[in-house]
Each structure stands twice: as structure tokens, then as C-alpha cells.
Length: 356
Image (cartoon, rainbow, N blue to C red; front, side, top):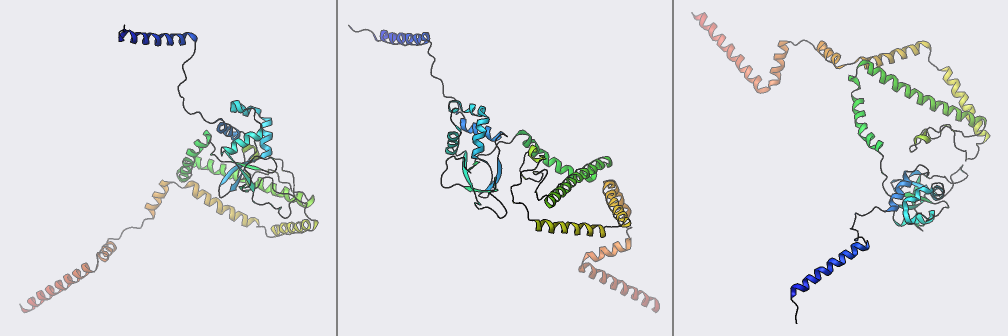
């Protein structure tokens, strides 16, 4: 005996409902939905390491492009001193420095480089610690600590202050262009501030050069105080570092030291002999003060009033002549014809008067 189809459908519904109730009672959660693509942890690790100031790095030129690079041994020592940076790797945080670097190389976040100049320059004892020119290492793109350099291949994230500074530069440029229309007090503040900063920089460079020359001549040592003051790429801390680096070059010969001593003495004697006298210094100071006063006292009102006062009076006759000259040759010919007709009419009137 066949059962109606309705009872079968009810049994199917009841069985599916009982299955869902048993799954709910067992406490098993439904499968999670597909979430957004998660960013690679090694990419996050590379960005974090690059932003960290503990890893010493430099800038160099590689294939006509500026890159930031570091040394292999510095990367190993950095991970030893900063193990918290590896926490971002999650399950790969137990990898050693060499394995992490190889993964970064495999993901094209790093590229191994080599120095372009592989010979010691004359007067040097060894190769440069941080070469300024690099090339891609063609033999093997594996990690190594022995004289190996690695450059970042991704673009570095710009901090907020650099973004704000990029908007500030156009405003500063406009402010510099509008300097002539500033009030007199603002002009004085800007002038003396810039002059003071410039004087401080020149004095620092002069004292630095004198100290280097004196120690080089007397002791044969190359000592540059504030060694990074003229560096193109340096952090604020490195820029104002006072103590010089260790001298790695060969000491100079006594003949060269004696030669430059004689040159320095001769230059000082010539400067003292040909120094300007008091009258010349007074004239130069007066001339410079006049130039500065002209710049500080200038204003648009003075410029407009000066143009109105210096404008010569207009002569009506000269203006008419100029307008007739500017009219062209056709108008000049018409004027000549009018003059001849007037002369003929005048002659006719005189002849008629004589006959009467």
C-alpha cells in the first residue's frame, strides 16, 4: 500500500529540522563566511622593520634610482636586540633571521645588492663601509652576513608630518614672494632672523674647518666635528652628532703637512696686508645699509606715489603731432590735399579783391 506524497515531504522536513536542532544542541558553529583578503604578515613585518630606527641603513644609487639599503650583519643583530618585531609574524615568529630574510627575498620585498667599486681607492686601507653606488647581485639572491647589502623594493609610507610639510611648502613660497608688502616690523623680524641663522651656520662651518686644519697640521689626524652637518641623508639625531668618526685613512706625510702650513701662513699674511681700511669699511657698510633700507622701506603706496610724481606733464601739441604721425601715410596725404585746397581758395579770394 502506497503512502501519500504529502507524508513523505513532511518526514523530510521533520528530519531536516531534527538535524539542525541536533547540530545546534551539539554546539558546533556554522562555517565562517569568507572575509576580506588579509595583508601579508611579512609585508607588515618589512614595513615595521624599515620604520624602526634601530636598523642602521643608508641611501645609495642603484641603476639610476635611489634606494635604502642595510647590511646583512646589521639585520641579524637587529632581530637579536628587538625580538618583539617578530611577534607580527604570528606562527612564523620562531624563524631565525636568515630564514626571515630569505622569505622577504622570495616575496620581492628585498633585493640583494653588491658594491660597484670593488677595489680599494688610493689612500684608503679598506673598502667603504657604506658604498654610494650599488648594483644587483646576479650570482645568488640568498641571505648572507659577509659583506652583503640588501635594499628595500617597496615604497616607504610617508608619515603625517611629511604630508603636512608638502602642503606647507607652497604657502611658504607665497609668503616669501609677498615679502615686499609686509609691514615694516615684520620685515625687520624676518631679516634679522635669517641673518642670525646664516651667521650661525657660517660660523659653525668656519670653526669646524679651522679645527680640522689645526689638528691635521699639528697632529696628523683627520677630525671633523659635526661630521654629518653637510650630509644629504641623515636623521635629526645624526645631523647634530658632535663627536667625529674614527679616522680610517693613512696618516698624512710630514712633507704635505709642512707645505700646507706654509700655504696657511702666506694666506694669513696676504689677508692682513690687503685688508680694507676703516674708510673703505665705512663706505661698504653705508652702501649695504642703504640697500637694506630701500628694501625695508619699500611699499606699494610709495611706488604708486613715486610714479605719479615722476610722470612728466603732457604737451597737447606734441600729443596731436604724435597722433597724426601714428595715423599712417593715408591720413598724411589727405592732410596735404586739404592744405593745397585752402591755399587755392585763398588765392582766388585775393584775385577777386584786386579786380574789384
